[in-house]
Length: 114
View 1: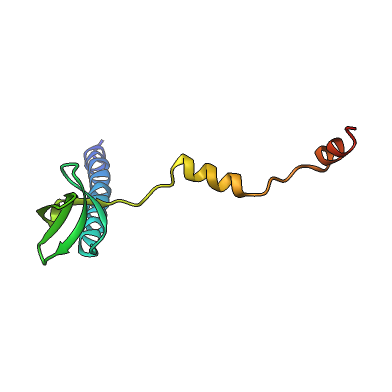
View 2 (view 1 turned 30 degrees about the horizontal axis):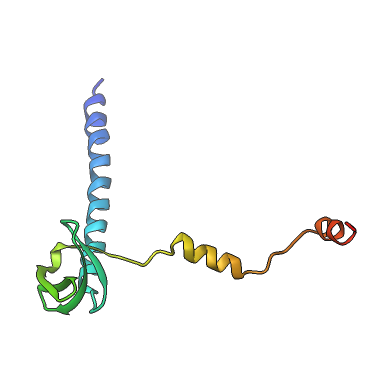
């Protein structure tokens, strides 16, 4: 019975410790991403605004959010750098260019059909 209280405290502190470590790792990852921004990067701000980096300063970033519309943001407001995803049309175009292989049985059936 004397060990119940220390075990309870330990059971509460261990998950909290691991949660703090994960949060620090994530914060470091975001900080590294914000420091490595380059002109031309497509980004998303913490408020959900999509833009392209056109100028960088030590603490600010100028984003082009529309043609000839440039706004200034703090670097900390940049949530993520967008990467261009392949669309279904691009995937279909690549698949259409790829040669189609058929099994030996399909080839035999196709050749002996007539």
